[in-house]
Image (cartoon, rainbow, N blue to C red; front, side):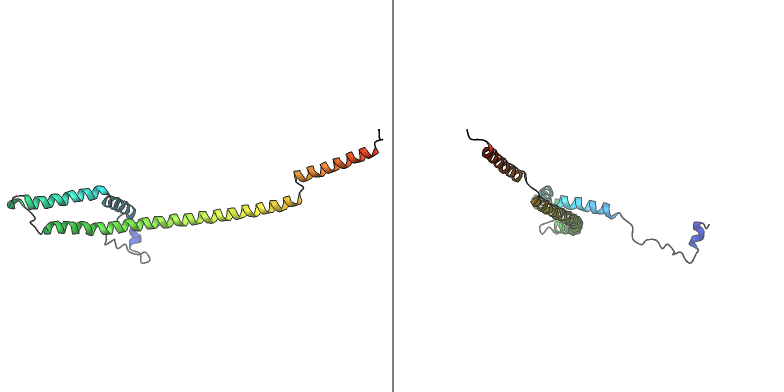
Length: 166
């Protein structure tokens, strides 16, 4: 039995080159991106962002000139909003892709369930048709009662014919 050290020197075993990119858990990253996208799409985020932008504009317009970090064209604010948008867009797209994948699985399951229901309803319809055909050949309760009533009337008529007149 060879040790792991000897396996490293064998030519039939590929060498472990290591990863040039750091590894990450795609599921965890996806869940985080969905929660960020969900928050970015909320009214709370829009309200918070509106307050920050109005506060930034108010501070850089109304504060003393020496205390204004970003005067009128608000270049730094534009840079911050662009940076936020450049990170938000891929996260939103990733969340949409994950939702599309989940929807695809849900649709496939729904389609399979619908096909099973259709097959079951076809089977039940065939069985019901077979029962109706079988019942068509069987005497129903009303038919038997009618026949018995007719026989009883015939017997009563014969008894009345045989009885001597009084």
